[in-house]
Length: 260
Image (cartoon, rainbow, N blue to C red):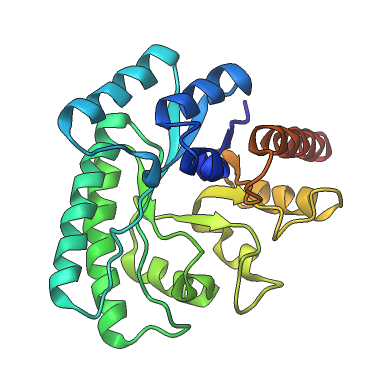
């Protein structure tokens, strides 16, 4: 059965206004949208202390929810300052442990490279760190990798090169569909074989046209088994707009199934 989710960042305006928290998001996923998978942005975490992380774990178990993706801000691999790199490494290790405890399917840890080309030093450190993270992830039943929303990760050939060098089943990317700075027409096709989590966004996919259907068919052909997630970025009427996009996504997936 196909799985769907709504990224918690879709409700960032409500969150900023204090009208929703992570528990409210999980409740909405389960009871408002009737879904079984959460797509959690770490900005919604009130804490990383033991009691709070355990309370989220208990809520997930009680509600029968799976975390399709945990997207972590501030744990990027690269920073020009070695001290900040070390701080972010520690944060990455912490969230790898949280991902294990929550039983997530994918974990987003970014490269932190805000240029189209990676230097040799940046590339080597990314390979080293992702190999370490991917081994841990594979050992505990999930996958880890960058999301295509920073300059370095919006070049599909950078990701393909990383994937080939890391060579681990625990590595996979979080894909914002069609969000490329180079190779716009073929980017999704290049990375589809190692995409662990797909996220659709109105800014990059025409939900009313055939492009969405074609993208879903592309990932099916590449053997994608992950969750179909969406992220509404408009910041207004978030509950309603997310519901609209979810219905559109469901229809497209069903149509793609009927044509496969």
